[in-house]
Amino acid sequence: MRPMSFGQQGGPQSQWDPWKPQSQQPWTSGAGDTPDWAALAEASETRNKRRRLLFIGGGALATVAIGTAVAMAVVSASGSDEASNKPSSVPAGGDIPSPTGTGAPSFAPTSAPPPLDPKDFVSSKSKDTAPLGPQILFPGTQLTMGSTVYKKGPTADTKSCAAAAKGTLPKVLTDNGCTRLMRVTYTKDGIAVTVGVAVFDTAAQATKAKTSSNDKSIVASLSGDGVKDFCNSAVCRTTTNSYGRYAYFTIAGLTNGKDVTTKDTAVFTTGDDLAEFAFRQIRRRGEAQASAAANE
Image (cartoon, rainbow, N blue to C red):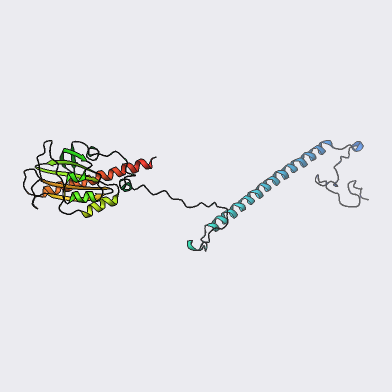
């Protein structure tokens, strides 16, 4: 008869597993059936280690999962950027509809006022109010035109315009209401030129005086202050023009009393230079007054 085994009652001996709550605890078969406390402590430590390993493993898996989610988000964002960079079928600039609505403020079109015209300020007595005189129009003691220097001679100023004119010019000046006639003479190398500037109340009167003049409308030459008489009996060269309410005339000749011919080109050049200077001075007068009015 076989002896009985105490660890086997009706089936195979069960193995104790610390992770199975229902598994049998190992007991020693010592006297009094006292538990093996050392074995129990070792089993408890084994369970704690396994739990820590599971927690660490779970954390690593969670980190991997978060990293995967971030990578997927980056890939998704990158895909959106690529899609946005692809050309799309946008209509041509002329076909793009304009934005509608009243959100944007609208302003009435504005424009800067037109600049003041200098000629307006020398075209009528009411606007042309700056000081006026032969020394103002023709300042200094000499005049330089290009590389040529002309010496300034005598000046004259009269309100009797006809008294300072010859030929048909006295009548022209009187008929058109000339109120003042200023003269100045310049000389160079045996050539003398007198410039006469006639003043009217309006530009229309000055224009009429210019168009009514002819080759016999002559401003009287002005001598004195070292300038000999000229163009009293000899043939001289004359010019006529106007700007604003001013008509200006020149007479150029030789100081030796000889007639001017077409060969005397220096006389023509001198007359043209002085006529140009008279025009510039009148225009500058208008520019100065226009500038002053703009700054008020």
